Length: 327
Image (cartoon, one colour):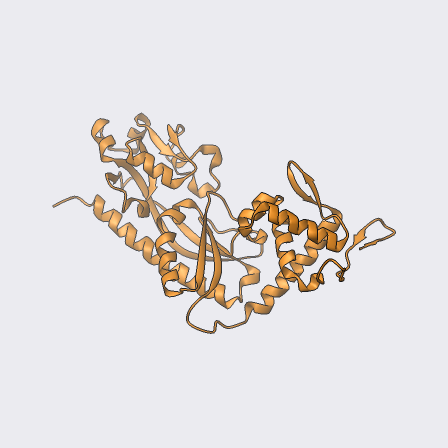
């Protein structure tokens, strides 16, 4: 470490008695990047599947090796010092260089291996990805697939996931975006609810019914604000989770907008007003631009997209069959 006349700290990657040369220890830099991006040991620990205490010791060892302080620790988290910010820039360049170096390496066999993490909104994560990823994993025994199901937009620049499923196409950032498939949504209600309350024959009738939907101030994408488009202002039963909403509908809690693919296996629930209200949205597969030439991720992305298209079509067909009038 060198303190310059202008007051800035300059890091030199050199060997000390207590440590290996930092340029030979990518693992320390990888852990450092996770802590810097998550701004906490607990957040980085979840991402890396490491105990926060172990991660804290690794960061202390790194600071000792560099003979400088990288983080300001507080109850609010880990904030980078000036030296930490300088190291982060260097580490990110190293990360990009390593990805670029392996991007063109061809897959040596028809099988995928290693770990791949996919981020997705919980509708796709609960009703589509389990079947799709299980099928991919069955064909690739050495592949580990992790699904992060969260109702929010994933930050691929911070490497929260290798790729993400989104409900709208992002326009900012260094990303590669591929439309995967359209999906459909309709009003749905439990048979038990419909038997207890007045018949619903038009959109106007919804004003007299309990509605199930998203918590209004937790809608993370405008594409999900379905009820507002129908003029519904009050949501009697609300959740930020699609699967919770479907369960509320199934329990007779009210009427809500549901993904057709979620209704195929949801007993006692059927679509209503299908001619008057029929919504169409799309899933997009989003990847970081630096991964464009990564053969392993490209092969997985292709299999994932194909599986999502097929599974969405299959489940939507089953849901439509449930709604079809009986002969």
